[in-house]
Each structure stands twice: as structure tokens, then as C-alpha cells.
Length: 554
Image 1 (tube, one colour):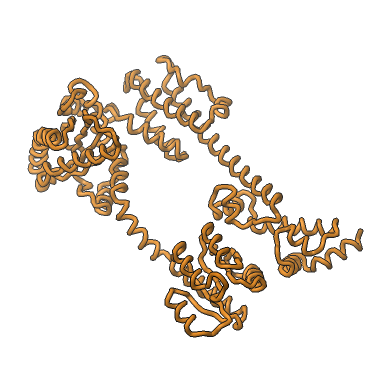
Image 2 (cartoon, helix red, strand yellow):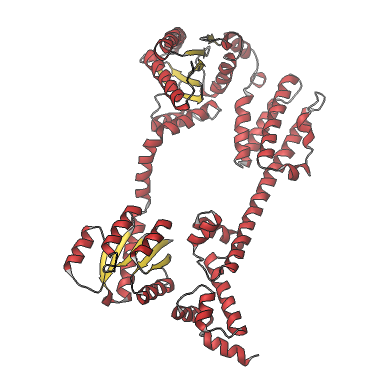
């Protein structure tokens, strides 16, 4: 819906045009009127207008001066000038300042309507997909670092996808990696900030660490890095291996040695140039992308244990773990639960029901069977799930609703004797309850907003009931309110307002001796002439005819 503002110092012209455009069929317009340039500016401060139809000759502020104010606030707003003076100097200045058209008042409503329709058609053309895509491309360039980080973070969390998709994403986002080639992770940690506390200064130093690493590693290997926590960096490294199988293995083995030995140089350069201490943990091998989450969790753990907990450490991931895993069948190989639990929390908090249950089933199935998992691992899974459920229940204040159908005390006690299938069923019931409660609450909130809107309309029938005003009152976008109202009630909000106004008008005409113009004002229609047209359009009779008929039937 577009917004049209009509400005003229003659009240009869403004009211007449507002009525005319309000009654026009086929125009998706919300129409406003102002009787001076200053009144127009007050409206422009509050609301975005798409078209301004203004007199060019007005006292105190001319239409040309108003045009400058419109352009400052809403550059894409179209200006159409009205005037009773057919003077070339005004036409030329208006067009030079970017006016869309210039109409003489004597040309009549039909010409004015045709001009407005033409300008609205131009606006629709401007708003077409090509224009939006062009703007989106510009925004993409500005947002590229964030998009790169989000995509690579997804890979750390297990969203590996196919090699083809990764290649496409790497290309589109300008990430210098290859989707089908294994990668090696290095995790870095700032050990000592040496008294630097400001977040901005710390971010600069993290960026500097990444640049130093890139300088030392290029061009021997391909590198992409980002900070995944305030004091930590993860680096994705590829060797650029190519040729036969033996050549690839040799290149990756050489690249691994190069990275492991070069990290000491990076560490020393950071200490000398930036005056801070850093530690690193590095993977034991280049691994496929679906194994990246496991390596990531392993390297993070290395930095928190044993030698990795000290300052300026370089810890290498052990190869014994890899050999032990290779001796186990696929269903017995250990998995990284931390990434899966984080994804489950994301799905739960964002209401992504299908994705949540698919991942929950996969996680619980991985712990099935007493021979497959020690109880300590099962307990880790159980307690991790308990934590994300409790977090969601507390955050969304669902305790009362959930406790009616699920025993929440079980979240704090998982006895080893409790069968795994019972735990699986319990978490399934709990998840259903959480999603159902959130859905029910959202529905209740939406219905409550609709009720509040109707109460507000009834209490402010004589006031401003435009979508813009309702949006301000309820703190939501006007179009969202309109769409929500239609979704809940299956009625158009503007039609409901019309129904309430007609009902109130009929009551006043039947039960009081108010003058017609007072009845008009009581229902928020300031022009008595427009009230007559409005009433007759919807009921087929004038207000006076309705009053006379009501008296005859009493």
C-alpha cells in the first residue's frame, strides 16, 4: 500500500481530494491531508510517503520549499505540483528540482487521478525485482565478511553438505578454499592480553594475529580464519594437493609439517610485534569436511588440558586417537556431541520443529545399545540435553505449562539404571511439550493483539485510525498488524473499522438528536460531505434518510 499526502492551504481542495482518492476503486492508497507546508512537514517526520500532491503557491512555505524538505527526508518520494497559475518559471523550477509532474487545478479531478496513477505505476516499476536485486548485491559486498563467517561457522557445526555446494559457496563468498579437498584446523588462543581491556582494541589485535598467520602461511597453503570467541581464532588450511594419490598424500604430509613448524614463527612474531602471548593446537591430519566438527572439538579440548593450558603452547593432536578410530566399525566411532547439542539449541530456540526432531533422533540413536556407549557418554548426552531444555523453559517462561504434562524433576537426575530408550522417549515428550507450549503462547499473543486493536478502535473512533497510527500505538509495522488481523479474523482491518463506524453512526442517528455533522465527527470523519457519501455508499441511503426511517419504525 502506497501513501499519498495532499497539501494545499485551501481546506476545501484538500478535503475534496482526500475524499476523491479515498473513494477511488483500484488504487491501493492510504491518503492524508495537510493545510500548510509546516503541517505537511510534521506528517513527513512521522510517516514515509510515496507521493506528495502539493499546491506550488502557498503562504509562508511554498510548494518548491516543501519539495526540498521532502527530498531531505524521503528521497524516493514523488512530487506532483498543483497550481492555479500557468507560469513557465514555476514549471521549469519544479521540473529542475525533480518534480514528477505539474498540473493546473482547472484541469479537474480526472486529470489529477490519471497523473497520480501514472506516478504510482512508475513507483511499482522502480520497486521491481531487478532493482531490489541490484541493491541486494551492494549490500552483499558490505556484508561479505559476516556471511563468510556464518558459512564457515556452519561447517564447524556439521553443516558440511556436498562438495559441489561447498565449492559454489566458497566461490560466491570469496573464500579461497576448495569444497572437495580435505582441510586441516588450527585453533589459536590469546593467553595474555597484557592489560588491554577495550573490546575494540582486542578485536584489532585478533585481526592482526590473523594477518600475521596469513603472511607466514601464504603462499605455501590456502588459509581462511575467523574469531569464533572473543579470545580465540580458528584457521582452515588446505594444501592445494593435486595429481595422483601418492602426490596428494606427499603434499599434505609436507603441508602438515610446514604448518606445525611455522606456528612457532607466528607465535614469536605476535609476541614481538603485538606484545601479547598466544597458544595454538593443530590437527593431526587433513580430514574430510564431515570430520571437521570432530577435529574442532578435539583441538578446543587440547587447549584446555595439560600442556595446552599453559602460556604460549603449541599442542599437536595425537595420531593414536585416529588409529584407534580406524580399528572400530563406523557405528562405534566416537562422535562430537557438542556441535549437535548447539544445533539442537538453535532449532529449539528458533521454533524449527522438524529439524530439531530429526537431529534429536540421530543423537539419541548414537547412544543406543549398552555395548555402543559407556554410561559416562550417555550421561553427557542426557545432561547436555537437560541444559538446553531448561534454558529454553526458563527463557520463554514455560515452566507452568510444561510441568502439567512432563515431570521436569527428571532433568536433574538420570540414574545409570534408567534404560536409554526411556530417556529417549522422555526427551521426545519434553520436546513436543516445549514446541506445543510456544506455539500455543504465540497464538494467544496474536489473538490478544487483535482484541486490543478492536478495543482501541472502539475507544478512539473519533480519532486517527490509520494503519500508521495503529502501528505506532501497538509497536508493530502497520502492514504486519493488517496481515495479522486478517490471519486471525479472516477480515480486512479497514473493513472492520468501517463496520464499527457505520454501527456507531446508526446508533447515534437512531437514539440521539445530534446534528449530522456532529455524528460525522463522532466516528472520525471530519468532512460532513464525505460522511454523506460514505454513509450512502455502504447503506444505500443518506444519514438523514436513515434517521427519518428509524423514527417512522419506532
